[in-house]
Amino acid sequence: MPVADRECRQIVVIGAGPAGAIAATLLKRQGHDVLIIEREQFPRFSIGESLLSHCLDFLEEAGMLDAVQAAGFQLKTGAAFACGEQYSAFDFSETFSDGKPTTFQVPRADFDKLLADEASRQGVEIRYQESIIAGDFAAGQPVLAVQRADGSQYSVQAGFVLDASGYGRVLARLLDLEAPSDFPTRQAVFTHVEDRIGDPDFDRTKILVTVHPTMPDVWFWSIPFSAGRCSVGVVASAERFNGQPEDLDACLRAFIEQTPSLSRVLQNTVWDTPARTIGGYAANVKTLHGRGFALLGNAAEFLDPVFSSGVTIAMRSASLAAGVLHRQLQGQSVDWEAEFAVPLKRGVDTFRAYVESWYEGRLQRVIFYPDSSDDIRRMICSILAGYAWDERNPFVAEPKRRLRMLAEICASTDS
Image 1 (cartoon, rainbow, N blue to C red):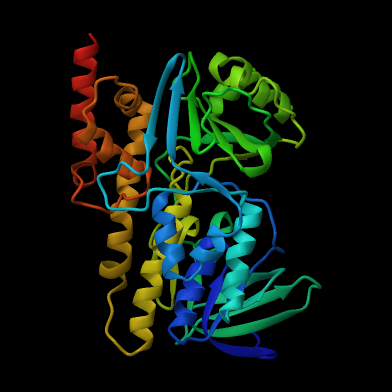
Image 2 (tube, helix red, strand yellow):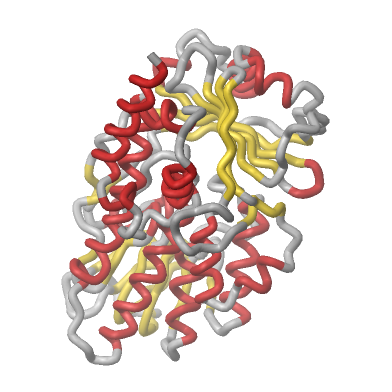
């Protein structure tokens, strides 16, 4: 890689989304030199709009919570689930974990720009519309080749690189770290609408997850925003889209029309934004770290949107990585596997167990069971609020076994 037009920086963060903005800010607050390189110009569209309560802990840690609270985003108090005439709501003020009782539902274009602006306000340099096109990690310090929007190039030698590039998965591609996900291929079709929801029973402070009445592996999200708008999407395996309209708007609305309870909620909706789609989003990597780098959030692994865990995992990874890297830069001996990868994967594996249980139908049975004890509902609610690392919670410490046993109890009682 040519040395001409090269600069040296202590830390380079790839991506200015939530993981990148928080990691960079935490490190800047510790006195480190941080540069963020972002491929796009903010604001830009992204999904992952229903934040979990645990997200606010990391925003608070990075000194961004006051700005988020003042931004006018829709307050979120929990999550609601519907299937036919069944309905079950969880309130984040009633969790097993000692967490924040509320959070927010956010258009990510606005939210991500706010976090990036807060990072800049705290002294982080962000360069927009610049892409990492190559990386050399063989020498003592990584060297990244960067291309500007006008096509010109330069290189940056970094003491360490944090990849927070999300679905771009920059280092996973450049360093051949991608690994197959064991999750089935699913597709999401989604849009933003003027919802005009007049149902007095509809709770705008909760994400609504609706299950298709005849295909329990197909589900919808409805995420109300402030100012009367809403994010609406359907998630299904690839084969479920066979026979559906090819036009994305028609496809989404066809799935909704097959689901009477959701169709009633959205009966007055103004469909004013073209639908988008994303498919095959489940991803994994061979390692979360290596010589001179670590992978954050979706740049490493993405499970499924059903429990809105993506942003929480991204922020958690940012906080963990910033702590380890700060100690390393101070000359301390650190173990990235034991201090970053293992604790991060612990919560990811908890979410994984719940995602798998959802599509297998066990968790749906638990959620809609009418006679669950208050204690069990608080334990389940803690995971829905993002506290998937709280191993005091039996449904975190042993998620698969506990969920399997509880689903069997619910099934036997129903029969």
